Length: 378
Image (cartoon, rainbow, N blue to C red; front, side, top):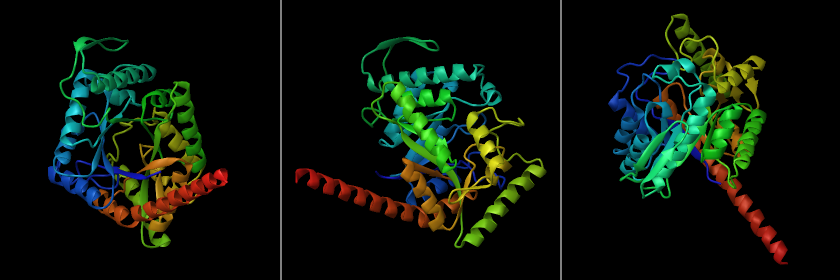
């Protein structure tokens, strides 16, 4: 199966290791970073969502109108707009991008962050709302006659959109999470299920949980799996590990100065979301796993989001990514700490190795299939 690569569409040059140098929405930097991804073999970039961050939808439209190939993964929280409005926004963006949109629905794992925009529902209530929201959006994308909706969280009558996506029957829906409630919701509704990078054995368990949830929801297909990492690469193993320790040192130095390195946990000592709790537990159990997974980056940020690293030469990191591909992961998400230069280096030195090896695997698989068919035919 083909492999795809997802990068980050940051709107400024800040990261956990460095403060941003300009405005929160730096238009020139946003375009420069996106173009670096398009020019160096990436398939799509994520426009993330935060309560106080620039609105990702117009930022994504700005990039889509200026680039020709790069696909867009737009993060969206259901609490910030009514689904009728959101569905039109997504369809319009799919038109602007000429069919390059995927929407990533975020349920929200932090009560304080959700409350910043007026969301007072409990976590379980949020998951129920997200499932209802996704179903409404899908129906709006594909229904050309007015319809009513009477649900637990949304009620409207006689609605029909006048703007439809380029993609038929609709754009893909992306979803993430590591709790049973997340598996149930995403397993039922998602085309792509997103996980944070964990050791291979634990990732395999999560993939099986997603598949089981999809079967329990009555699906005959299963979501594609995406896994996210923070690659730290250098020409030699020694240089890569020196870079990795400098990276953690920079994160700790900023924290010691009282600088915010991430807004995900919003000053809380312990994360509420299961995914971050898992990352912290993995870091507490050990620093190194499998071929190249390294956890101190996650520990330094309190398990904030995509924060486990893959450390080594481009060849080592590529082989580590192929280990996940062999588990059934076909979308690989990567984001360095120097967003622009790391995106270029990863695209130059890691992506080609992975694509070449995947092509070899696919060719060998096809050859085995032909041999088996020939044997059956006698």
